[in-house]
Image 1 (tube, rainbow over the protein chains, first blue to last red):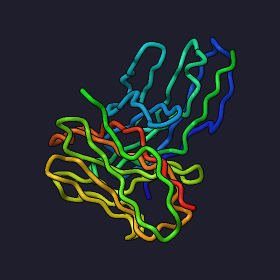
Image 2 (cartoon, chains in turn green, cyan):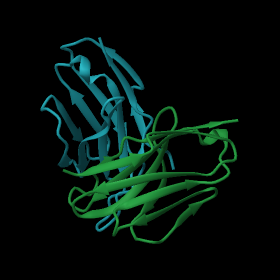
Image 3 (cartoon, chains in turn cyan, orange):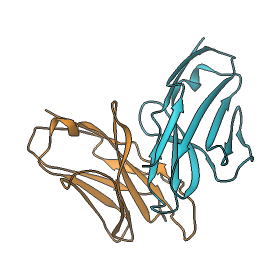
Length: 112
Length: 115
């Protein structure tokens, strides 16, 4: 059965710190790994990764995928209180291309 | 481009009733997926519709069903509601081009409470 595991489940840091969120997966016919940020309602799309070793960046956020070791990390530098949210990792396979399997999420709290 | 819209945003029903939720995808997107989100189980895939056909299905009972119209709008229906159906129901749309990616964009969700 396809599985996505995120760690840690919860993280509390101070504003300005750098955080690393982890996502490991076991998925048949892997196609892509996606990161989402969820505040109060709908998850908002952050990154999609399909190739190993290529870092994706958007401002203070960056992510990289390791298809050999089956994991991804999401880094947030110089954290701000607005980064407080649940970060979700999801994986899609070729078979059932639009079926995403989600991890439990990491609840990140940034204290001022 | 307007995002994914879902109606209604909130719904309160009683056990045994049925409910219909609606989703309008991003213009040009042909794939609509539905997910259930609960504190205990997280986000779980219900089903996906593409060109009016159910293309994928998750592990939910037959009380959960859906359909898609020719304009790509989709509805999901839950019959004989149970307390455990209380959840946030999220719809996601994707262009789903041939050989394309899994990139999906979520709507705001419908919060269903079953009493």
